[in-house]
Image 1 (tube, rainbow, N blue to C red):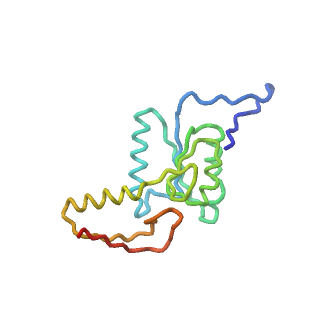
Image 2: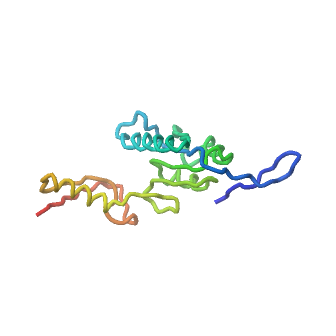
Length: 173
């Protein structure tokens, strides 16, 4: 990762850019507008919770919503690149991103974490096995005898990713 620690100052030459002493602002990048999209309640809740946690720590949250056409999302979002390069943000969270965005987000000169199911050194992912166990236990505690799961998410390893929906049935017999 390029840190861009050197900066040219007219009349002084090239100097080492001072690192911020503390985190003052975190960036949050959304690949789509979550404010009005149906099915994005979870994303709105996560963003609101993150804002509340950061506010309690006196850390700002700056949000970027990528409204560009899908065919342009493989290109870096200039305002975000500028903010990262000028250290206006000290970290970035990528939400609801795909491989197109991942390729340029991971090159930004700030610490980056993304919620993505594809392998990446910057990724944070859900433990689907534990999530499933907790769901099943909660349903069993309520007396449910069987459940069906309809999803496009991988039910096995990330190497077996599929975009085809699948239906699984779990019985508690």
